[in-house]
Amino acid sequence: MKKLTLFSLFLAAVVIILGAYTRLTDAGLGCPDWPGCYGNLTVPLSNEKVNAANAAYPERPVEAFKAWNEMIHRYFAGTLGLCIAAIAFIAFRQRKQGTPFKLPLLLLGLVTFQAALGMWTVTLNLLPVVVMGHLLGGFSVLSCLFLLYLRLREADTSTSSVSQSSVSKSSISRGPVASPSVVGLSRMKTFALFGVGVLVIQIALGGWTSANYAALACTDMPICEEGWQSRLDFAGAFSVPEAENYEFGAHDYGERATMHIVHRAGALITFSYLLALGLTLFFKHGASLQLKRVSAIMIGCLFAQVALGVSNVVFALPLAVAVLHNAFAAILLLSLLWIVFSLIKHTSAATTYDSSENAARHTTLSSHALPQVLSKATGGLHG
Image 1 (tube, one colour):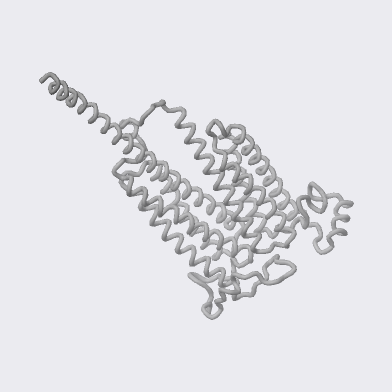
Image 2 (cartoon, rainbow, N blue to C red; image 1 turned 180 degrees about the vertical axis):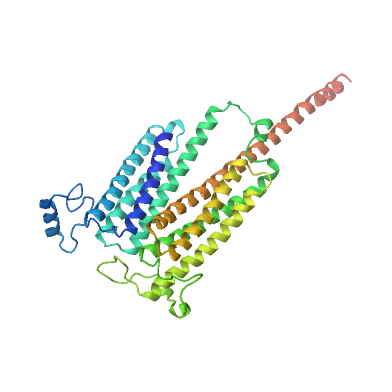
């Protein structure tokens, strides 16, 4: 099951990248129906099928390049759905053996809802709320698969280690965190969880900006073109105007500029917070080597994201750079989740050590005190 989860994790990353590529090549409606393409399982290529497709959808004639982008994304997403269904089935069969079951069940629900969002993306003509929800759903599936993989790997590590009925002091001392640092790392866990919330909000802002074609609403640095203050319209920027088709956006320039500015402000806040978190963990006394490495990865991803975001503006949204911007957002989220998972594991392990050490000390004291009590009692009886 661990190998299948790892494969599904890789597949989910590919689906997110393909989704970004499909959106950025304006291929979200490359196939105007769902789940097929102009009523076919593949893109219509023969003259007969193309003519039939054009007659059925005269408002959207066949564009093979866009249609293939859309269908390849659907093929990979469908394969991912089957893999997650298999994971849920295996987890159900092995639930009595300690295999995680709730997380696979959540994944099955998420991927099912993702399929519905994919359908609504097409049938509702790229409604921005649905497009953004589809993006967040993809990130949610990726995150849950990563957490499931970490849990399965941790379970394998625990099983392969030497079985002990109690935790020894020597084994804990080789663990990821020293007992005196439990309180500090526990506090960092709270800050890391808050960082996940900050990052998810920023990803949502990026999805909203992209879904409304506002990525190039501001082309000046560091904020926007001159007079941007007078164009701010928060109410309009975060509303959904009525339109028959949302392809290429339905908001005016001021509303799109507001989306873009808010996304930039969110990027600054996210960068500052996560950089402070990463540096604190990297230099934290008692933090494990793995935790320091993951923190370094997160810091590297932060700087890469800023560079990619600036490049999107300066070079007018190059396709490769824009796709990488989505990919690094996913890596950044996974690294942060890895940090949270490590902090939870390390603090709980250290707490277990403290509890077991206290119990052992109590037992030792009792064993030393018992003979003395019995001795006194014996002496008293014999006078």
